[in-house]
Amino acid sequence: MRSNAPDLARLSLVGAAILLLSLLAGCTREPPEVREVRRATQDYFHALQRQDLKQIADRSTCLVSARYLSGARILSIEGLRTVRAGAVDSLARAEALAQRTADSTWTRATDDAKVDSLSRVARTHSFRASVYRCAERAIQLSAPRAIVSSDSTLETRYVRARFRYAGPAIGTRATDRETIVRLLRAPGGKWIVFSVYSKEDDPAPEML
Image 1 (cartoon, one colour):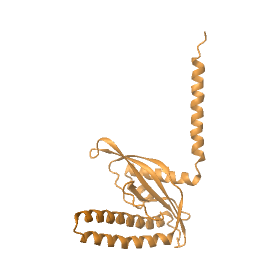
Image 2 (cartoon, one colour):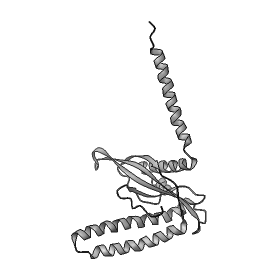
Image 3 (cartoon, helix red, strand yellow):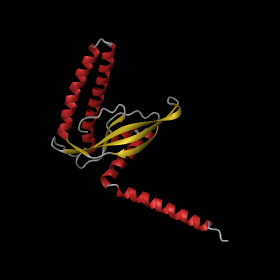
């Protein structure tokens, strides 16, 4: 009786080839503008992991501690948003005022429960104000040779990612943390990372 092992092996190879082609087809179906965001984000992740300060400065305007970062993976790339450059400036000024007010209110509080609540509010305003300042700097870094007027339309996207941290300070097991990465592009410019926060700490900046 003839063994059917060769036939099974051929079927397995055919199945593997079909699966590979399906995966490749899925990649090619990704729109070019999404691939650009994916490439920019991955290049930024590689720079972070290598702690390449020059590449980090070329690709981002926010400070991120990468001392124990051992890996980063994109989970999803969310939809495109647009905002006027002038709106970013207005948001930055408004949030700076909100931050000063929150800090002042928090420091004058006396009740422990209220102090804790107000400190969380002040922290959120501080994060959000930082995001807007970094977004303003990202406009210039995105298109350094262009004149971006207040009416210019900026593109923004946010990326859900998983950062993995490992090392003596982390413990015996690596720790994964879902992280929100925000990018901005000025007209004719490149994508620049301007905000990186864990999902729990992300200040959800308005319009970005």
